Image (cartoon, rainbow, N blue to C red; front, side):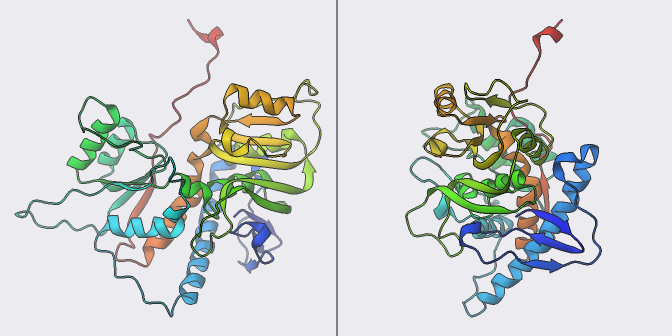
Length: 378
């Protein structure tokens, strides 16, 4: 869902994939602040993102009310007994675990909250903190402890393969032991968030559209098994056909601004293009957050946008006349936590006993790679 201003109406692109959705609704919001073109806002980008996040939260509250009205005849689920239960229920609503690629992925509640000793009184969890992060690192765990977080939502799984032991010899196991000792639970959505309608890949499409009209948005790899209501036609990766062709330079500026003013990207150009100053207009783009080589390998889009792609995959696409854009793996994912997940989770929790929960985005979380110029080295 992407927001842009037209007169005094806030235009909202559908949460669900446009190919299967009714016409775009318009909601009257009065004289709200102008949401500027995200590719040309310079130093005001953080302010505009905050405005967008507030607007997104307001709209998501409206959509949640619609959902509650449509399901009012269904028996309500029992109230969550703990903050962990409430957050898990909210995440399952937003990103059903059935969407995850269980053939290799590991999603869900991967670290539960350790029980208190029988002699110790139950801690009150009202007014607690939930920390959102893309990856779990020692710096993120330190931050969680400093912020007195009771739960972490970590996009990437903290456990991928079955464990035969749990010791301090492995860095990730050490972090899990630290969290368990502090009774901090960890939930990991990963590919469920990728595939979900309104999830990571739809967010990337919205960034590239920059509020402009799309002809069609489709799923690259649809999920064939039965899926929950509202996610029936979803899957991994997206292709989006632009209503008005744009240059590659425009797409790159939009992408940079949308993922957090990313300054450096890697571009693989086909042999027919000698540089970025002479590129054809782009009308069809494919996106896949993270590592998109397998998902995007058969797409016919002119431009492929992903976090990372192996050498031979990229080489093959350039020989087919396609352009590959990579921004480093986690940089294609991280900003989603702030602009989409945070307001969505806040709204979901507001109707529970944990409505005053503070949801924060990690400041310590970062991509492990940095780009350096060796000429600057001493």
